Image (cartoon, rainbow, N blue to C red; front, top):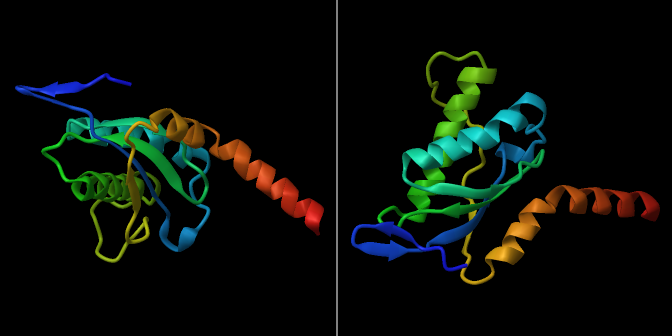
Amino acid sequence: MNDYQSLNPTQWECKYHSGFIPKGRRKVLYGQIRTELGEVFRELARQKESKVEEVHLRPDHVPMLLSIPPQYAVAQGVGDLKGKSAIYLARTFGGKQRNFVGEHVWARGYFVSTVGRDEQVIRRYIQQQEAEDKRVEQLALFKK
């Protein structure tokens, strides 16, 4: 829990529970996109001295635990992840060679909450997303 990071002469621990959705909450995050996007998020975060601590891509949303240094605003960190990952998806899966205005992958806005001392609870929540989604779907089938 007390694994502070250091930026000379500052020590910090700034972790955020964040999430965002594809435009229209479409279920588009599956297959090859799903396998590659987690690593893309990690690399984009690393470029800004940040770190994706946990991420579990669901077909219609992306919950993650981010560690962002104090010199960057949270909005800047999440905005970079969304914007640059959208460019990556357009180039890799959309066959686009340049960025065209009007092509949007992610919905506007995002969710963010500071983690504080609840880090383990949030990690478990993100890791258990798939099992919870399956449980809810099964309950819905029984109610019909």
